[in-house]
Image (cartoon, rainbow, N blue to C red; front, side, top):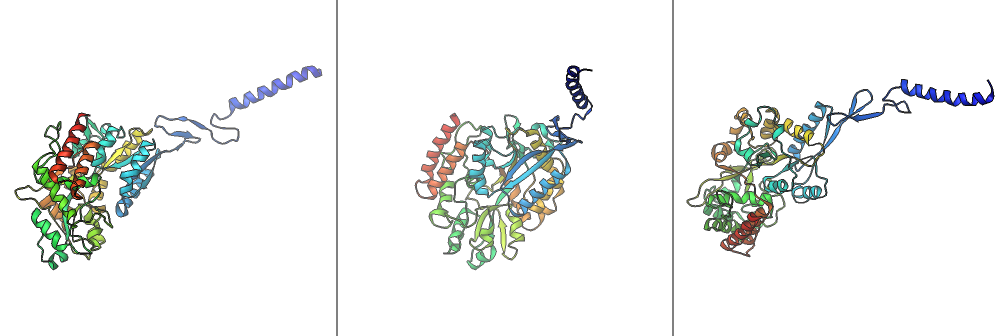
Length: 441
């Protein structure tokens, strides 16, 4: 063989050798001999080498603290360990920052979490913006019928279930029994008695009654019972027109505003208006607060004589409270919406163990599912819980869901009366016009 023929044969042989090696080697091997990544599977995960998967990562945000935060930390850990497809990453934030800045900024920037908590007061704002996924297709078989109809109705828009209700939180009047006795005050049952009690109990160091002083969803949540007790309403029965401009609404606004005008309720609070610490640490004698306060009152402030009564009512009025509660939501714009929805349903719709623990051990609330209420009935008759069960629960009306413009108009009316800019009648008239305009849009 001459040199010229050899020069032709060598390159050809090398090429054939390379082809042979590639053809006989592993399709999942790269040049370093390590497994190479393959295409995604049907469930959105990616196979790597010997069958392992790269988990889908989901961001879950909320605003819980202490025992409630730990509940969700444990919940996420349990879920992450129960399957190999999804990794939930949980973050919690200060409640005021969460609702006012954290969520709105994240969503407006296109960086909203996959899973999050939403309050009824902010519900329509997020629904109208397209940030709430329809969860109707993801209910485990037979579970949807277990949810209280009123709880599901509150989160249903155009036939779509845009959040999962997992708790119902009611408002009551908490008070320091010793402070009332020392001031010679009976537990108030009427509006007049509540006002007189607050006047007698207010000192330089103690607020007679804590009400939320700042605009927001929680602000309106606390006002609705006053409005309903007086016979007022925000909208007409068909929801198509404003009903806010009425003597009943004016009466409720004036009564609410009196506590701030007379300095009986502080315009600035050391603790959030939703925190029972106002009573527990002695800075208030009475406070309107919710079912969630019981666990902390018992566990942290057990040496403080905190008691509970139904909300006082006006002369000729009817007992009413608000039934609120945060909702589990899924970001409709999430790339992994289905996986997020499955986690939410696993947490509170798949069995009774987790929702019962949440509503009876972690905090106190009424579950949104009939089977869970039945299973925990003994717990609902212990201590202050019995007052809610026997005297308050039946008077609960689900917290209404209004558009942001309507929520804003109500909050503006309350604020203007509280700080002396308008009378209740003038504030009701002004807000009525804004609500009517909002309904046209």
